[in-house]
Length: 639
Image (cartoon, rainbow, N blue to C red):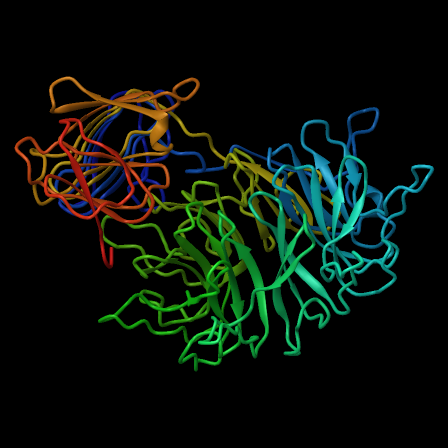
């Protein structure tokens, strides 16, 4: 039996055969689940939501990005003329990336109508003024004059502070007369260029440019280091003759090869015996994830495929990431190539692209995106359909594109796919989708603006998400996303996502282990009939623990107040909810030993089991208990 709802003042429609409902502004509605495991998302009004039986996910308000986009604009255009018009590009523009503050987009373009010299240059579009600037230029001479690169730009990315940009180019007029792909850091304030793909300084402070191509560069979170790929043989003691992953310290100039095996008994780290690529820093900069075809980085690597590894830069240890969840303690390596790793914001997980079919629920024989929990070792398929009342999430029936992106909280995954079973298009064009990783819903992003919301007519690639998660940039030659797009070339677009909405909701989990998300507004969250029964209910709040005041007047009901400016999440009232989950905290499990059994408030790193009562060995954890009971922490094994 499908979920029931009783609209008070509006008529709603089930979206895409799932239980996530399209917003109906200002409506206050009743939604009821069934005996199954339901996913119910309310509307912008003050809703009553009851999950009834089953393990349900209940959200009071649509989150940012759920549902259709709000607007779309083309940004690969010239600066505004006297009439405010912006010229179309007369050649292709691709691979956008947002500035950290979301006010600018950098992309590469051949378009001479945007100022290019006919070669692919890096350009920055100011989203507020519409102005455009070519930044792949030489350092200013004594007269302040600059020249565009005499080669092509392949990649361009902003630094974490937005003041610099990494440029990957084969230009020979940037001070290094070598037509190889090189990596430079460009200072956007004074135009200075610094070569990144070079050896570390010798005793005289001299460096040597890499003698072969270098590419795939990205910053550490603090901007002090760059990880990149190179096939050069003169960056370190590199004699393996394959592509390797390196880290360059921008302060000291030191260069470290990352694609090495773990230290042996003599402390020697053997070079990899296969190509290594796609390096990515962990948030704290202590680890690098990368992909490698080498079979000597870990023991028993016999699959002959590119695998994903994590290298600890402190200990030198190497861990295989692209493997199945443990089965009786054994993990099975992938039977297909795995590449393009990305760390989660807390550093505890790694997402990657893989063609493997040995990771559990993946039966589509095509590339998909997975995430590996580095503690529990569980692996999860992310590119799936939305669950419905009668069908769980299923693998997509199409191919997932190479480039994908998360918002900063990892609540939304943006990926391109040729799938036809995601509920919103039936063709095999590669569209851009957003997967809500909390609710499981899937939204089509690559469409024209409301009210038409026409899907793109050509392939969409290379998503980049703004820091606040409100916008996504992408490139496509599709000519039907905006009016007046007549250039037949690939353009860069920015879609503004549907805004989150807020109402004062009442959410009741009912029987089962439920996840309750109030969202904006002053919400009332009720778990089930009792604290500490077999069905553990979880209330989820998006911000870090320190952002909220947690209080109780009677030891039964809790008040959770958002202290952030404007109190975006409001003040929520919780009853019979066992578990509180804040921000990117890892999962916690709460037992029921005490007389009152009120839920501890936990903010911690790592999967933790928190009890009121018995003592165990000390483990550092940020936690408080409303009853004042002493807390003890046990590290869980396997989850």
